[in-house]
Image (cartoon, rainbow, N blue to C red; front, side):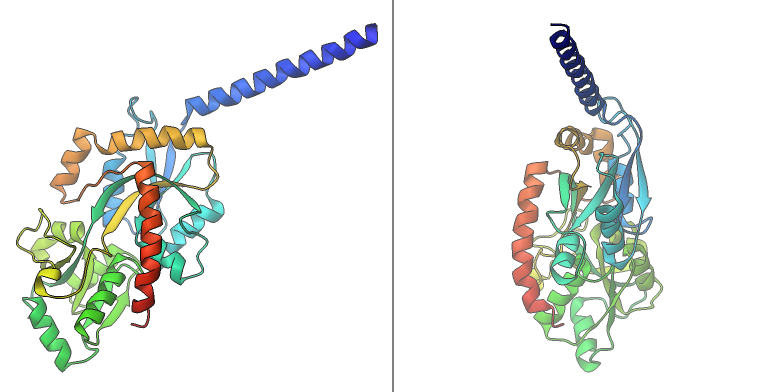
Length: 327
């Protein structure tokens, strides 16, 4: 009898211990986050992704949002590959490592290169913006239009150097479409991010470049913006025509969608909380005001909308890149 009582006591003790343990774990998840959260930006400080990430997360410490600040960590290189590979290989799975994603960048790279990431390696949380690529030249450039640039390029094959923020980022895709559509031989020079790409154009180190509309808008006193790679003109640059308007087959494939995600493996409770908080934070009046003032296009999307967009973009880019990769 005593032996049965002893066994029963052990079972009860274990049961209580398990309840305490799981109760504590549940409480910990409910408390997320208990300390600052890191957001890895795979591009240079000062570029559009970095600049916008700091704006859209500036309200994170408020109690109605995360209640903790978000710390930006820049890991630039290889058009985003360095930072995103790091997130997959070394990022924590406790919700304290997040990443800023760029589409089509990370999806196109996962198709073309042997990256550690693809759409199944990240858990989307929310999208904050959609930034078209624009064709830019230095302020003192002799080119005042796309027609001027093409006329020179046809007479000087390969001598028109153009830069962008890396390989198979939106800028590169816009370049490939532009080269294919015009049949002109152009030379693409990939940089380590939007900032060095912009600096190369401003300084006249290259003839032209593709860059983010938002970066070009902020630097418009030092540039000429010749065209927008989108299906319609943008409200920030109403006088700048789209390539489509000029009869050049460059569509919206290079539009840069930006948002936040986790490395795969983060607890669903944490993902669910973040997926609720971030869209509301992106739509905060102070955030929207600052984004508008800086010429940063906003397009807020929920986790489910981003998941659907990623899947659609992956399928679309597989087909698109087959016809562009030879250039």
